[in-house]
Length: 200
Image 1 (cartoon, one colour):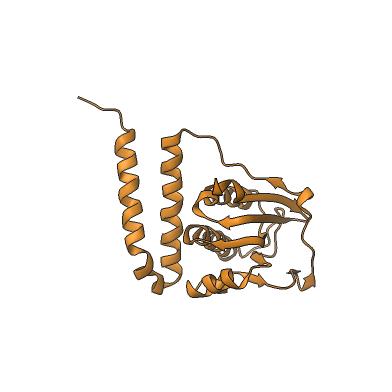
Image 2: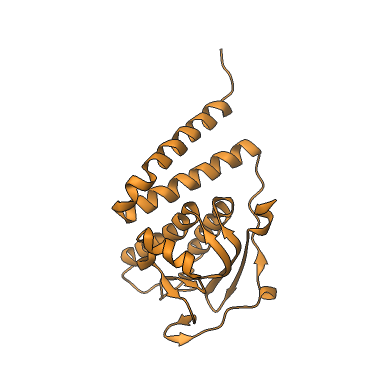
């Protein structure tokens, strides 16, 4: 199946969270990516590098999750004017490294390219050239085990949040995604209704 080739690998080096995307960045891998970002931000990490050298394309859910990661980090920066002490304190960035022309075009079309540090040719951390870790230094990210119905609902919730984020960031995205948001919201309601035990 196609989604077996859409993978995420992760690693942490020098207070940087490295995320490598292989195949396509789609809704299928967006839920574990969102969960990872929440967990690492919760641990105090503030700089992420997403290696897209082996990523052929990205869908709107995946892009919305990446944009949401940026917004969370920006909100933390605004809320914390005093110096922080956790790992990764200081810089608050999401680098997109080695993205191809197609991915860059989609970022620009959605108006979210301004959120990221776009390291198209060379990754730069703190103004200095940096290298990406080898694949051997990264670990595959696995989605959390869950019952099929609960998993479908969680996936739909991630999709809904991602598209709302894209609409919030760029008002021109509202006409593109308002119907998508409506359909996903209706799907979530149906899933929740089906999950309720039938009563008298």
